[in-house]
Each structure stands twice: as structure tokens, then as C-alpha cells.
Image (cartoon, rainbow, N blue to C red; front, side, top):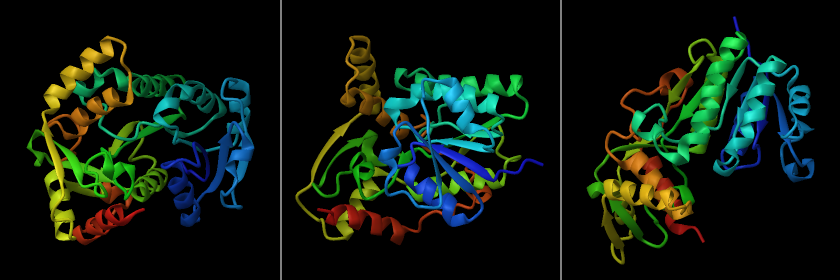
Amino acid sequence: MTTIKNVAIVGATGLIGRPIVNGLLASKLFNVTVLTRDGSKQRGLPEDITIKQVDYDSLESLEAALKGQDALVSAMSFEAIHVQKNLVEAAAKAGVKRMIPSEYGNDLLNPKLAAFPIYQPKIAIRERCEELTKEFPSFSWTTIHNASFLGPDWTLDFIVDMKNRKADIKDGGDVLFCATTYDDIAQAVIGIFTHPQETANRPVRISSVNTTQNELVAIAKELGATDGWNLTYSSTEDLESEALRRWAEGDHSEEVIAMFINRAFIGKGWGGYFPVRDNDLLGIKGLERDELKAIVKLAMDRS
């Protein structure tokens, strides 16, 4: 039976990585090692972790750092996904039993999304993981699909800007999608490592809450934001067409990337809503409506 005790993480100080580190430590089930290019940037992390400085361009450096690790979690940012190529190779060669690559977000096994150019780097990493399980039978992988991120910060602003009372309502605003807090993503990591057999070589699909843009606006109005809203309306099908055109013309801007993402998690049938989820297996309780309201309230009141 596979047992996971020693866990290495990259991207430990980011929005996804820090809650994962905190969750792993709080569980008291794991020894945590942070891999970093620059050790000086890891200040502020808890003292009961090990920090190893590595060269992401060197397979030898990464393999040496991963020796003795049972699992590797990547919380690398969207811009750094390609850096995982060497990590995957080194993890398999070092004897790592489970890797969680940075594929957070929408369900990239949905064939519609697999054609989007912005997701190709993530898909390539996962496909390499799949190949390595054949070459190294003790190696395995799990990806975490959480659809939208949810917090009183830019993640909620991306859906509905609560502080400035504005939103671009997509496809009428009643399309149901999954949204997940950083803490529940961290719990998914713990659940994967405590259920290695059940989660091997597949994605897990999770959600803190299922909601819509219109529901989020309605909650804000319940909390006192009754007027002053600037609401525009768009079609995710139109956004997809424009994004593909502009991408083909060489426009890879954040605006174009946002168009793809909105199509991905709000477009009905595009992978932003999971009718079957792994919450129970992974120990994710999810949010009650009052807890969702509390997040909305924090987003409204932040400075």
C-alpha cells in the first residue's frame, strides 16, 4: 500500500501554494519541503519546513532535491507552467510516488477546452505524466480541477467586481459553475495523499460552492449594494470567436486569455460545472450560503 509522508512543493509562497503548505502542516501528517530557485524569497514560511534551493533548468539538481520525497505538489503560476517539464522528469527518476502538477481550474479533459491554445502547456505536462507512469510504474499523478477560484480578492472580481459594483454578465448570468476556495484546494491535496489508491492517475473534481453570476450580484444587493451597478452583457460564444481570432493574430494579452477562461468556466457544457465531484472522498465540506455571503461581504468592504 502506498504511503505518502514526505511532500515537496514548488510555488509555495503563491496564492495556491501558501494555503497548501499551511494545510499540510496543520494536518500533522506530512513532512514538508519547499523547492525554490531563490531561498531568500521564502522568508515568512513556517519554521517547521525544509527549504531546498534548486536549479529548475537542471534535471540533476531537481532529482537530487527530490530524492526521498514521496510526493511533489506544483503550485506554479500560469506563466511558469512550462518549467514543470524538468520537474516531472526528475520526480519520476527520483522515485516520487505521486505528483500533482499545476492544472488547477477548469476540466481540461473536456475535449472543447483541449483545443484552446492557452491550455496546451498544462495538457502537455499531464500527458507527460501519463507517459512516465508506464516507464516508472511506481510513479503516479493526480490533477485538481476546481473550476473557478473563490476568495474576497481578484478571484471574485474576475466573476463580479463587488467593490466597484460592476460585472460583465455572460450568457444571461444563470449558468451554474463551480467555485473553490484556496483552503478547499489545500484540503484536496491532503485528501489525495491520504487516499492515494482512489486518486491515482486521474483528475479529482472539487467545488466549495455552485453558483451563478446573477446569484452573486443578488447576494451583494442583499448585503446593501442595491444601486450603482454597472452591468454589461456578453456571449461566451462571441468571446471564444474573438479570442481565437486575436490569438491567431498574435495577441496573447491578458484580455484575450480572460476571454478563453470565461468561455471555459461559464460556457454551459464547457467544463466549469461538475455534476459529480470528489468532495466526500477528499474531505471537502463546501460552503453554506451564509459562508458565501461572508466572502462577498469581505470583497465589498476591502480597501
